[in-house]
Image (tube, rainbow, N blue to C red; front, side, top):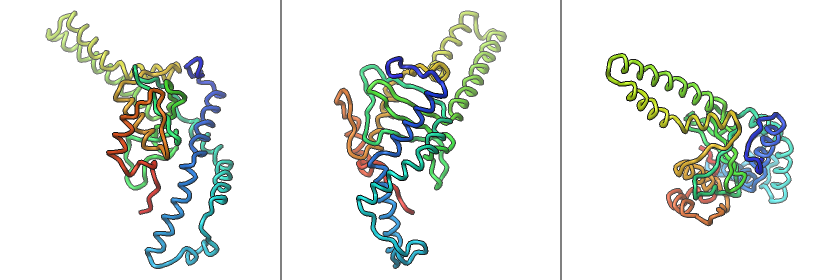
Length: 263
């Protein structure tokens, strides 16, 4: 796929890519350390309320997690959950993206990034199976794999179809009323189609498997995600870390990646 720069959308390829995404999501030190972070947050919460972990029902034999035990539990967790994670990911729409001219994708040590434009309140919106989820992982400095909730592509397709029909209807109406000449109608539709071209490219890429082009705003978004998820470092083929420095300066709480919080 890296050589051909194309998704063939076969079940075999999709299963392999889903398994790779699942493994890359689960294997990282950031994921392992989240276990310890959760435990520390729970201990803190219990102790702040005046108790101790051994007083909690089901935790009577609790002992602090050691590094060796943490590694062992992490490996067992990967073994037990990777299949389920891959199955959920395989249900997404896979799309390739290529960088804007002169730009490269960042790659962090926690490379699978989740995002979601929808807000579900306190429940959060970054679960693999949550409506609207977006999953991103660079495959190379010039190629990224995206896995989108099917509702995203379907929503874009329906919105694009309705907008196109509305533009055509408006053009015909204005022509019939004498507000547009035939040449003016063509100009109107050409301008409208130019505005819709990025969506058409994305829909075409999703269908045909070829990479969709990114602009500078897209690149800032993708590389900011990598920076926000990175636990220790990000790499860039062009050694351009201006965005990473700016992001960390504006978001100091994310310098060590996204951390679990207990309310």
